Image 1 (tube, rainbow, N blue to C red):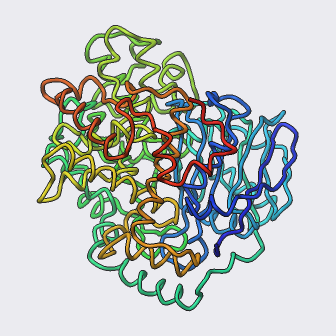
Image 2 (spheres, helix red, strand yellow):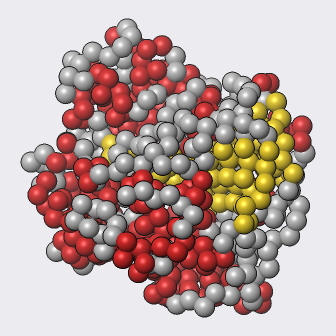
Image 3 (cartoon, one colour):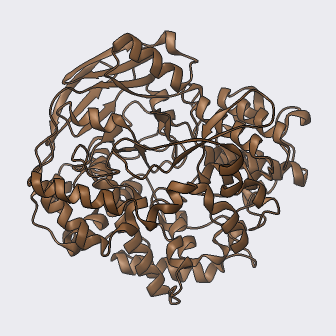
Length: 602
C-alpha cells in the first residue's frame, strides 16, 4: 500500500522513551488511516476497562493517507483515547498544519502512554523524542503556549496544546492547535492527566509516495474546483452559523436546555446578522479551498474580542442558555477557546445548572454565583469558574452534566441532556427520528458528526419504516467514518455524484489498493465496529444506547419507537439483539485476523 509509512511512534511519558511500532499492512489496508488507524491503535495499546485518568490510557494521534497529497480539506488528524466524560472511546478530529508535519516525521501515528513525572512538552523532532520542562507554560492559554514554544524551538514546529481547563482536568477539556479545538469527549483532559502541556512536532522528511502522482494531481484539481461549487456556498458565505435561524423555524433548535425547539430571539443570532454586523474575516484550514471558518468581532463597546464561531458553539452558548446578545456569545466562545474546553459540553452543562436554578434545585456555592437563563453575565462568570475549577460550583460543573446531576440529585438527572455522558449537539431530535437513533447508538455519545443523520430527516423522501431509517443511519455512519479515515472534510460530502464510487477512485490513485465502492463502505463499517468493540471491552451494555429522559417524554420520542429503531439498527449491522457483536460478524468484515494481538474480552 502506497501513501503510508507503515509505522507509529510509541512514547512512554513515564520513562521518556520512544520506539517505533510497525503497523501491519493488513491493518492499513483494512482501515486506511486517520480515525480507523487511531481506533485500532487504541484497542491495541489500551488495557481492558482502562480508566481515562490512568497512565496506561493511550492518547493517539493518527494521520490518513490523503494528507500531503494536495487533495483539498485533507489536513485532518484523528485523536482517540478513553473519554473522561463517557468512559468509552473518545474520538475527535482537528484540522491543522500539525497533520502535515506529523506525516513528514516518517510516522503515521503517535501513541502516548504513561504519565510524565513533571509537567512536560512532548517534542517530536523527526524520529527523535524529548520531554522538555513545561512549568513556565502552566496557566498559559493555548495560543500563548504555542507562541512561546515556536519562539523556543523554531518557527517550523507545530503545536497541539491544552489550556488551564486541561491542566485542571475539566472533563471536556480540548486539545488546541492552530486556534482550532478538538474538544468533544475531553482529549485535553487526558493530556492533562499525563502532565503533557503540549505536543510539539517538527517534520522535515518527505511525504510517502502516492501510487499515481499524475492521477492524484488531476483529481486534486478537479476536487478543488468542485469544492467551490454551490454545495459549499453556504459555508463560504456565512459559515455554519447559517443554520441557527433556519433550525429555529423548523422547531429543532435546542432552546433553554431542550425545553423548546424554537428560540424567539433566533434572528438576533442568525448567520446573516452576524456576518453583516460582526464578521471580521474568513480563513481556511491547511490544504483547504472551502474556507468555512468565519471570525466575528464584538461590537458592544467593551474590550474588543474576535473569535471563530461555528453553529454548535452559537447554539450551545446562545439559545441553549437563553442568551440573546451575540456579543455575549462571542465573549463566551472566546473564553472556551482561552481555557481550552469544548463549547458544546460547557454550554450543555451550564444549561443543566440554569434549569436547576429555574426549578429551585440548589447548587453548591452562593446563589449569587448561580447561572440563570438569559443572564449573560452569569454565563461568562460560570465559564471562568469551570475553566479554573474555581469554587464548589466550578468544580461541580467541570465534571459535566451527567456527573453533576448524579451529585446534585433531586430529579435533576431527568434534565441532564447527554448520551453516554456526552452532551447533545444542536439538533432537537423530537422531530428527527434518524437523528434520535444516531444520537442513541453512536459509540462516541451524542454526536452529529459521526452520523450526519439529520440529512435523512430533512430530505424530501425521508424513510418511514424502522428498517429504512436504520439502514440509512448506518450507511451515514459508514460514510462519516471513511471520511475521517482518508481524511476528507465532511463539508465535501455533497461534492460527489456517488461518494463511495468516487472515493474508491481516489483511494486507488493515492494508495494503489484495488478497491471499489462496496469495499470502501465495508471499510467505514469496520471502523464503526472497532469503536463499538472498544466500548464493549469498556463495559458497554444495551442500556447505554438510549436518549435523555426528557426526549423520551410524551412530547418527545416514544420509547417503544426508539427501541424498534435501535433493534432495527442492530439487525442492519449484523449485531445481536443485545448490541453485542457475534464472532461471525467480525469474520465477515475481515476484522478477526486484525485483532489477534488485541484483548477484546467477552
